[in-house]
Image (cartoon, rainbow, N blue to C red; front, side, top):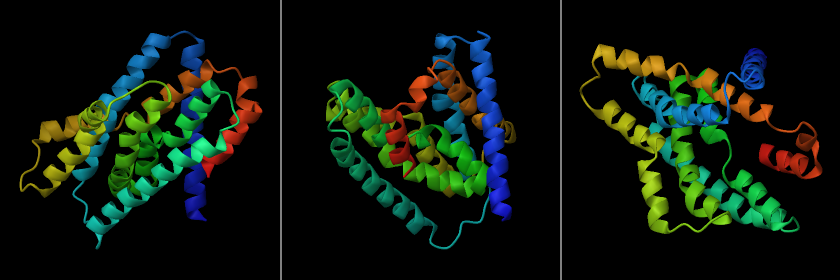
Length: 233
């Protein structure tokens, strides 16, 4: 029961932060270009700091930690394969443009965007580590499988984007720092932690600014409701 109230409190906090994002967009405090910059800042700087900080928390890792990490990657890979081929079947009757968008939404969930802050709030640093491992297959399929729905992309380019992705680099950097017998200087550790603490509000602000431009009526259309049910599953 206590966990239920924690979840409810988390949802209320996130909802208020999203409303703040809607408000700053409606008041024109931030425009479309500013929203893109905020999104890039989140993905390229804040989330990587959040991942690295989770490995530096000085926690005691549970028995079977390595096995759990491998299990997370394996389960995620299976889910991604099911999403790729399942989306082709589920949306085959929709027009091509609409089908591509819906399929991409199934293949590339927003767990890569908002999953880390939720995992941290619910499960702490260990939750962030497991979530980061789980997202490795997702970040790979974002390019070869996802972008192939809209444009052509070579395997070499897809792999290059994967290994250069800041969140992927952060995972391996965190693993290296965790295994190394040295620790970051105090000022650097504090800087990483400070940037990491921005994860939840900034991610919710970005979502709010996106929703601010979405026609309310379109959110309740039949394709969107069908997609939403599938995505939740």
